[in-house]
Image (cartoon, rainbow, N blue to C red; front, side, top):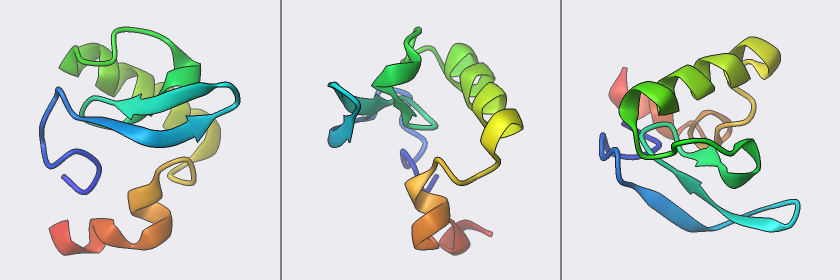
Length: 71
């Protein structure tokens, strides 16, 4: 919820990532990861893959503490 307010079509075009712009979908997956950003299952699968590599650090809602409103 803290990343996209539950909107699978959410887009943050203010995010800049090594030559591409934007984070997309439920988990706001950065453009550098490629894929079907707006498909909820694929977005969550990619988020799980990223989480397994890096934990919650890649998500702004974690580093800002915004996720705390939802627990």
